Length: 87
Image (tube, rainbow, N blue to C red; front, side, top):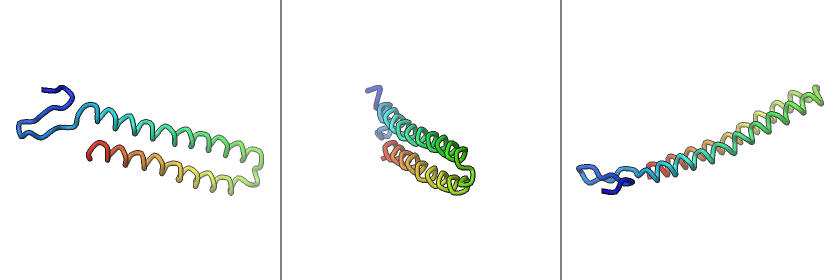
């Protein structure tokens, strides 16, 4: 019996270790990009608010929109992770 693909008594194949590892690695890569992007976005927004305090409201609104769009990339990565794991 292969170690990576275990067979149950009914003959159904369980998810292999390689598939689970690949799906987890894919989600890790999909999450690290948006994390770096959000950190950079927040840092630049704070710097912009420090330089022009009168524009802080507009910068903050734009920052939150950017965070929402960037976080959508992480959610798409999570959906791909689920598809790789269960499809």
